[in-house]
Image (tube, rainbow, N blue to C red):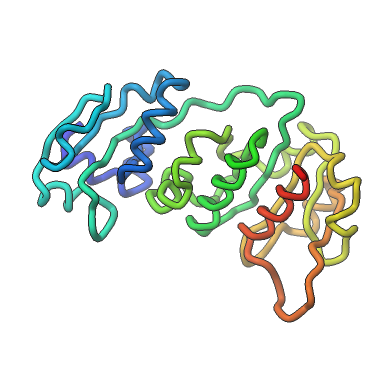
Length: 240
């Protein structure tokens, strides 16, 4: 891929046009190389490195570029000097019988999504479903904050909220008026629904889905938890 096109991948419309996204930094490139062993399409990634990384061991097609060129294509203020152009991950296969689904409704913050991906990858056996109008999981900020977890979590994009009722028999959600999260029944559900950071999920949808509400009890000093924190607590409860 030409350098001018690589730079364009910082924008969603060009990521979708080219079907590729950016992975930057030593750690993420190492995670990419490990993932490519299991996901054949990732072997078509291309590596762009400055002189200090020209001896980097990789099976990817590699281009050595100047530091000035790296600064032009990088999304970070202080580029490490190693960046990969990666094909979109293949469509996720059908979920396994033991796999739980985490559905995010119109999540907007890249850091939240990246952190949630890290949590799901850490605990394993989770599938992430994203609604339409959610932040792009291939946004460079999401990819960086996921710390490589994006390669290890099954994802489905643009899943309509109203499609859940035909797909899952039992759906749980968070609400201030619900059963305690410690309730044993928390583990009986197929899908766990989390809303937009500011607006949550419209109540009419929750009623239509017959979603069972659970509550993370706190001391009441603040109004709400950060979305990623709420997902992290729920996932921990599901796996402990």
